[in-house]
Amino acid sequence: MGAEDSGPVLKRTRVRDYLRNLVESQAAGDPIPSERALCEQLGVSRPTLRAAVDELVTTGLIVREHGRGMFVAPAKITQELAMAGEDSAFVLPRAAGSWASRVLEFSVIQAGARVGRKLHISPAAEIVYIARLRLVDGEPMAIEHLHVPAALVPGLTPADMESGDFYELLRDQHGIQVHQAVQSIEPTVTSEREARLLSVPVLSPALLFERLTTDGTGRPVEYVHSLYRGDRYRIVSRISLADPGHPAPATDQDASRHHPGIPPGDLTNGAGGRTVTVGDVQPTP
Image (cartoon, rainbow, N blue to C red; front, top):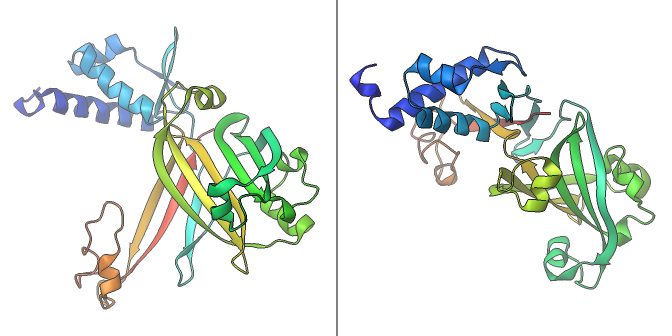
């Protein structure tokens, strides 16, 4: 081992990179060598190895099974977010895998101040509140909390929310054509109840999605907040630059935009043009 590998952080990084390569070279469900064997092979201490393994368990690349050892995590399901049109809206194709829903709660309640503001209705107006567990190939993936103005969906039943596509139901049974959605994503952790429903440890990393969906007239038809497993769900962006030989002129608006991971201004300095970004949302069953 060289001097550059002597620090604990560098050692952990080296071990983590080795394990990543090992995972990528094997199939889902394949066993990972024991901690003892890996320590001997890599020449590192047990705490250093465990710190690296913990990182890969948290990110969903490795799974631990008590009494059995470590294994390569299940394969990914890919769902693409494709940017379309000059307004840079994203088109959401269907995700791979077999998606299903199980209704946890279904009730008609008053909107209240916060949801009323979101849906542009009175706090006293009735909404249909649905909490449902989303599953991929039978495994829990997310918990969704939907809020829909009751006046828009007369006769909606829990069974409607466990089969088929909700947006297709809005169109076919209620004459509502969804047009646009604004969605935010932020990191969080699971509560005790959420962890139990998602079959993960308490305080596991998770992604919180918040979405407001509108129809062609701009009327809000759905407000949703969802919690997705952080160990099984990730977002990957692909950034396509304009032809460097024909750079698009930079504008003040371009300069103010920020693409995650790219310092502001790097794409508007004359070396490249505007960007088109598509993302992959990749849950694992």
